[in-house]
Length: 323
Image 1: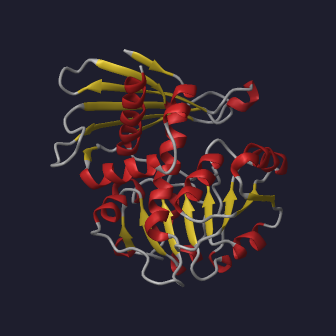
Image 2: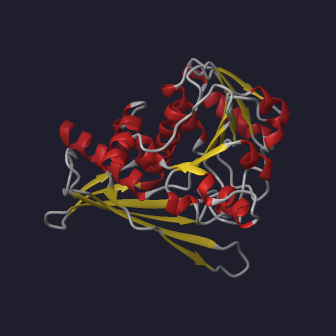
């Protein structure tokens, strides 16, 4: 069994190639049961979370890896790990042969996750963002932010990126990290002003209260909501979903786990029929896509095990080929 660490994952993947891999995965399909989400109570500390995400490749016609792989991602989220100087998220991805069940590789899950999450957002933007989207606002400066910027810039002609974070120093650190990207980067303090100017807004925070207001969104804006992964968390207000056409990564996850969708559904502000489609439909051409230059589009993701499997297979096969 191969052990593939974060550095090897980083070396094996690139944009937009991983976006293409995910598009093919959603087009051909895989067996991807709902993820297992368990809350772990900790005395005197915030609750931790254990996530288990299984998937295996389908036997769809034309799928190159059909029937060959099984994968499961195990992730723990301990929100207050920063007090110990440790990351909040740890995890591992186990890739197995579906012919024998034998383990093939153990892969660094946090690195795999940031790569595939950003690729899924870029895949949605490929269908939903305006083809001429040039100015991006990145809300949040955590581990995902640099990948989201690079992934979106690989599928749209992004030239300028505005960076906002509650703690300005973290946005400044992100600016330094992206310095070699060739993009025009700026750290902004006025979130409203930046949102009103953006062609594409990507949010990756753990906010429980709306950060982006629908009244701020200009015609033609595409909103990519990646954070707020629980039904009691949200990054957008009700006016966003009133004004935008909405897509999700998967219907199962979007309608049960995504607070930006679940809360307005429960409040009767939107109906399930207002969800235009998911990444399966977008990749297969069965879901509607952007239909005009002025419409506001919103993509909400909470993660899907098919994305992890596709990325893990891409990493494993790249490492095997170069061994």
